[in-house]
Image 1 (cartoon, rainbow, N blue to C red):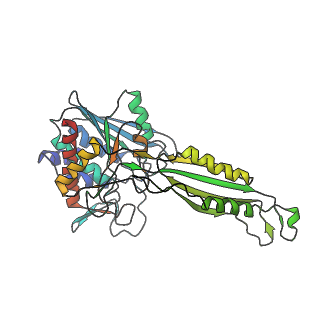
Image 2 (image 1 turned 120 degrees about the horizontal axis):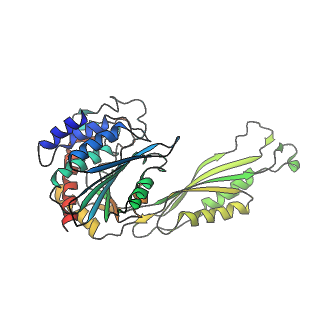
Image 3 (image 1 turned 135 degrees about the vertical axis):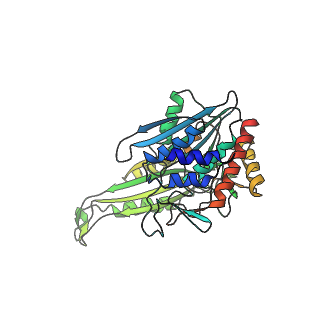
Length: 387
């Protein structure tokens, strides 16, 4: 069924309408970690466009299994341009005006979970491929089902697969929703890194009336957090805002009013720019925690990265401006994305739909923006592969 609808769509024009392609993807429930039917739909689209498609499952519960897809099409020598994205979505939640997995057009908007983050962008890129048959070089799609989750078995596994097969993209565009007020007003050339830390301070439980027989860990935890709160990591730089440390949880779990607790815990999160590394920050915080007799566990979600402005970002910016009339802002703001992993392969830029409704109830994309994004992606392909 997917193949029939897609064939009809792709046969109607050189640049096919991305709306029915987006509908097909949105109609497949694919809460992270995603597998199965949504990948069937994308594979059917890409096979009709002459791509060879490899799919593989990685990982086990609770964060897996995760399905990944690598699609390749080569027209001889030239650059290898990769488009990266994800088919998994966050849980829709309750309170939608319509079924989040039954895409519906109301007015000028297409509603459905994943409309902007980021099945709409994938549909627009697939539609853009309708004008790419004559382009030299190689085009690939690197699509995971694990971007919204733990990100353990998704893009990292795709990178391993590429290396095992001796495949190395020259440039990569990630279709995350980067636009803020209007399609084309912002693209991402980097992202801050992220590290979360869990602090534990142990003491000795006892009766509050006999404090000399106990050791209250709370004052020591308070001193640790006070010291952390006073830290200024940096003032930012030309491309990144200042790094920030946030205390995200404090827990003692003491249900009794007359008991000194045996343990106190806290959690902090640091978003850092390219002046730091996750390991160096972890070592710095660990030293002051251990000075108060505590312990620290750190988990680095990703390092900061920057694709310095140059030919790639210029070509993308020119394509955006030709279609929309907007000169996009080059930014590193916001959360993290799988670009943090892909940056180890080649220069990476992120550009996609508006992000105003991502992860919200009644997530929606302007139908016109799907077509305009298709046109931008088609122009980017032509500029990059014929430069």
